[in-house]
Length: 100
Image (cartoon, rainbow, N blue to C red; front, side, top):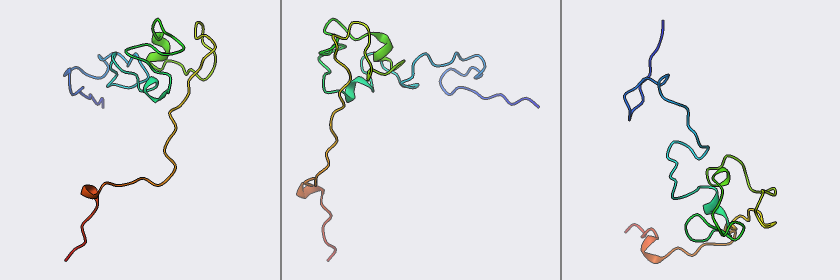
């Protein structure tokens, strides 16, 4: 027995659909990078401190990480945006109101 699954968007069978070409997932957007958006060094567009002339596709599309040196990175690697660790102030309009 052979099972055939259909791709929701193309209506082709999954065997006819090529595998994803990026590691950012099926919602990959060439205008943003899930990896680079988590770095403190990201600039405008597809540039950053390490790559002022443009971030290479291998890094932008997350084919490989940038915690190790990459050719042309000026000796600068990925620096994660720090996550908040202290208490977070919740605005009044978002607080639950006591039940009467």
